[in-house]
Length: 288
Image (cartoon, rainbow, N blue to C red; front, side, top):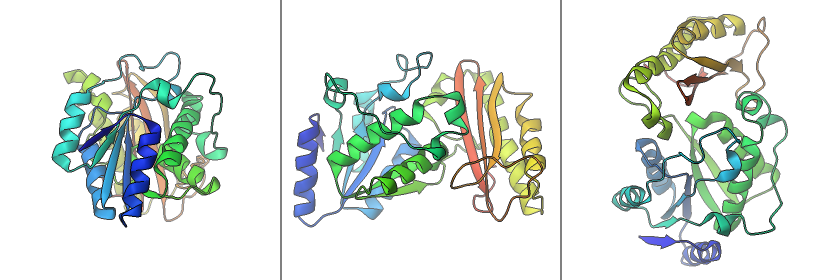
């Protein structure tokens, strides 16, 4: 397995792989790899011949009061994890390599990044879109796999890639969960034992919405209230519980009737840890 630190060496590597008639698979990460990331790697390996994982904690997607400085950095463990999973190369650039002195360009996505997390994390998706656009420019024609736990991020990147005509197929993979239903996340390691127990309310609330939807409930407000009733007593604070259109992500009005598919998305805080989760009604199974 190769370790690549230079952006231009990454570009040359990908060009060589394609020149040999192979397809590049790409999994962008911020490290602290877990089973969810490995599922992305396995999907990339299924779709491509040569899989690259990037490990880069991107500073531009963190707000001034967020956890950039304490975000877990576990490169040696990540390296072993990738090697065992059959990853062909890791791209691990420095901050200066990706944001050289004097850089000033940012990528913004219009409507798709405004609701949900966009309200509570201003500038976050601009940072995400910027770093992924840079990575896609380096990797070139490829298939890139993202987790749908970060559903809005996935939709933002689908929109960005289409709008900028980037030669990358963006794939969203279903959320990977622990046996008790909790969505796997690098931030789960921040949770105390009692906070983790309370975090299970997210999966319970989403599951109850799935059951109600499958039973014929189509009122957006009623579906939302089902989730809130389960999550609110357990969370220290709620950023949002929303029932939204699954592509453009615009929340439905409380009295609206949803169609055959609808996104139910949650963002809460337990202690100092912010957790997100979601299901697409009419598409995803109940988390538990």
